[in-house]
Length: 228
Ligand SMILES: [Zn+2]
Image (cartoon, rainbow, N blue to C red):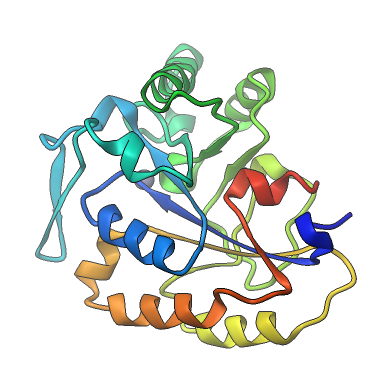
């Protein structure tokens, strides 16, 4: 088992909610040849969907132009309207997942294979529906601070959030390691947090440091997880 090019290390990103700040993040990823999965709520994908977070205005993007914006990256389910799925009826869970998948496949003209749980929460009914839909992976918000993705891809635990104080330490460890089994550095977050926390420079340094290395495979979540 290895990633394309017989590599044993892979790096991937997962960003949620389809907000305006994704434009700057996509530009940063593209500049560094990095690949990301963007998790979208198709029922809320409109500039009319906005809120405030620590004094910063957050706004979702309109659907027009998104296919071009996200080209080369992956799109995944994040729930039609971002509810806490475990608090819903089974019919509503089904609607939130299936309808989001149908909408995203139509908008992006692709086959959707993954999900990030809205709010990171789920229950057995949610997992059963994902299995029935042949969804390969679903991301939680529980961080491992290591590079070993468990076998249970429907309860996928990322390495860390981009705001982890250990981010650069983990990056150095990952860049220097020579693993004999597939390892994944998996970072997640929301692009609006870079505006709220005023730390785009931190992400720019991280991306420059981890990118363009011969022994790391850079793929979307699905590309990277295809090894399992
Ligand atoms: Zn979200």
